[in-house]
Amino acid sequence: MVAAPGTNRDHDVAFALELAGATPSIVSMAAVAACPRLVTGAQILVVAGGFSHADALGAGRMFAISLQQGLGEALRAFVADGKPVLGICNGFQTLVRAGLLPGALGHNVGGGFQCEWVRLEPQPSRCIWTRELEPFDCPIAHGEGRYVNADVTALEHAGQVALRYTVNPNGSVGDIAGVCDPSGVVLGLMPHPENHVVARQHPLHTRRCGGALGLHLFEHGVAHARSL
Image 1 (cartoon, rainbow, N blue to C red):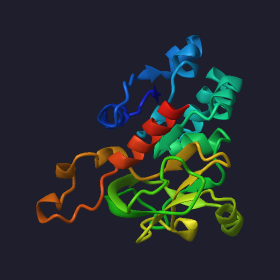
Image 2: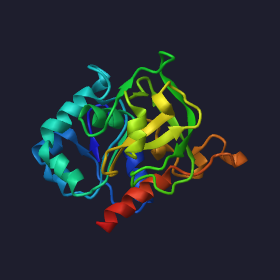
Image 3: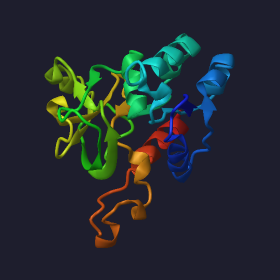
């Protein structure tokens, strides 16, 4: 898992990966730039959420530049080998800006930061992370989470719409919460599945209203990595 200055959900993702059966490690972007093998030798790459570089030049922009400079061709080779890549929230913004995922992320239609629980509906797609998943709940926490794409129909036909909101919180086109690359191994989503990996994390868990766990998404990624 790669972290940048300001990233704050890396330990949450590490916990989710550990529950899913992986052996996670967190490495800084500076360490990756000095030794790309820290990532290229891994079986899964996760770009966790947070406010990398304080979003000072736009959400995910500096992280994306660092990722491209630090890994470049090695990152593309990682994907070409079929190894799973996941970007969550700020990590999604980073993968989009790095050119690994289509579209763009803009400011929420409400104009402010939103932090609430949402339900996600997995879509028929190429995505290896979301196949056969049930709808699941997890929180959002973003100010620039509105997904934008000029041709949602083409994206759907290509099997790249991986997740939709059941109730759209931010104005994302087509209610899209997550998209994948053409191969299906790279997934980006704005909500935080790593914050609903045990039932008690849901605010309504005592009423049995929490839906499925986000943990299952991580289990799919780990299972795919083991199959390679």
